[in-house]
Length: 272
Image (cartoon, rainbow, N blue to C red; front, top):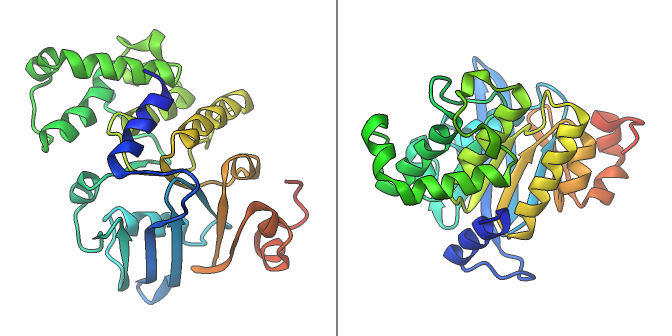
């Protein structure tokens, strides 16, 4: 099983058709304040099915707050988040995950005392059985088919040699790949990635770009928050720019590169 197989399976589940733009994820007039400080204001954003949509902006722009609203970790003061006809606003992170949304965190959130293989099997078990309650010493042994699938996913992200290693012993870059595998095993219809290459060396970053390109070819819809413009312009079909909690520009990579508002607020004279 390859990355293409995994993402093709997810595409078949939602009836994905290449070349047929369709808005599948929409953020509608979202506001969020903390103690009177407006973290998000009037945020509207639409993501087409099968595209890779990047959200960029300076530190403090509201990117992580927006992602936390999308996955149910924060409730907006106003507005709604909708995925494939499901209103996500007001749902728990678990309920949002069950309708096909998976998130890869900026700081890897893995189970340090479990092996690499077991880490991937945990979300696979949750997705399969509809709950997170299991005994690792009995449930893992009963799931030979899921174990095979987890091994294939780990091979696709280059971690096949570390199956029996404890996650606590992994490098930061490998933990990032492990968490990506934990997202992929769920066969999400929408994958949200919060700075997937943060802290990586350049060769690890390039390997992650190649991996995300393979996922893109499978048709999975992705939203990426990323500071590395090399990553953004290598992957994104469209880009939204946040500054001061507001969307100041949206468009294709070429449009964003040449937008004077974006240059002033974020890109400056950076080579991209």
